[in-house]
Length: 277
Length: 283
Image (cartoon, rainbow over all chains, first blue to last red):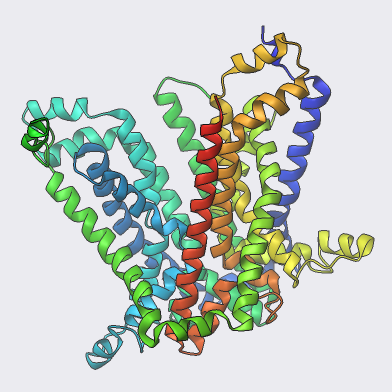
């Protein structure tokens, strides 16, 4: 049927083999290295590193930062996607570009901009100092930097989907007397829930794993402003390699779970639409 | 006369759906507060001591070396990642084989793995006692970790999924008819791939290269562990921003940041124009 465009077996087999080899070396090997290094001296030192009070407080801080940053970007992302895909106004293209802008900004710059605003010599630094408000080297700074780097995730997964779905059902609900909140809750959100969940998952994974942006605003105060990735760096710089890799392995698991959940969600939404892979 | 209907058309058309004011209001507050105002600070800060001061920072030998390393290593890494990403995209879209889905999911790993973890892992593998590093050093005498080569290796990992994921949808939607036509006209399979498939993929490859390159230029976490961070040799630009901040040189840090963003923007613009030219040039 498709004989003419079928690759010869030697070619396809060779290419598949090469691709698998590349994936093993470039992608799987680093992952394997993290777990091997973490368990180099058995489970006990790894467990000790993870249950160390400083590590626990880093985990707590990481969860707290994500628990604030992710909802902010979820609400903003839904509003942004609604504005772009369901409303008509001049400059929609520009709005999409601006929403995606943080992806092309270096994480270090994402932290730097908040230092320029709130640092000791920043624009609002003296005022904050006079009023004894701590933003940098404290929770608010970590949250702000995290919001910056994870800003586009939710909006970006929703916008193409909502544009593709169209708004006929929302209009039907409107003619039947539904108000804005009812339309959003009963019509739009059920239509986008899997994509929304995938966007939130990716946003969360990046929020918990972010390094560069929070490194700039954290001040590295052990047990106070250290998130998990920063704790990994401190342990590594102190030559506590097993500890560093043990905490890193925990973060790698977070990435793997996110990847698995995202793949499952994609399969789920594909089945819902009646199509197949 | 002819402009009259245009003038009568209202600036904002009547909306079928409610909620525009609320959605736009929330979006603009979110965008303005968290992104635009902070970026405005970055755009304003470097100028406080005037243009000569900016020039002085940007032409410091250490900063110039940083520019060369960051942009050079990123371009090289994206060039290496381009054929690898193309191969991965080709294999998962064109062939059916056991493990295809796992391979497909695995491509996103660099997106999902925290950058510090990736950096640590690369360092462990490519150090002179690591799995790959010991082999390379034993066989060829190459040192990867703690040299500029290490920076390139880390950036290949970072930019690979951008290229694979940009090429993949184009490859999937490529009409088979063109390939069939080439085959009926007597082209061998390899000729078809080289003359028909690859030119059609070139714009997507360039876009993917640009995305991977832009991400690589800004990358921090995956690089600083493996780079060794030797002044003038293996210091990337984001690290130099951190160094300036540690010296409380806000204006200097902002100058490097702004220059980095502008340079990356200009390169992306050039790639966009190149791609536009390629599209125009094709029938």
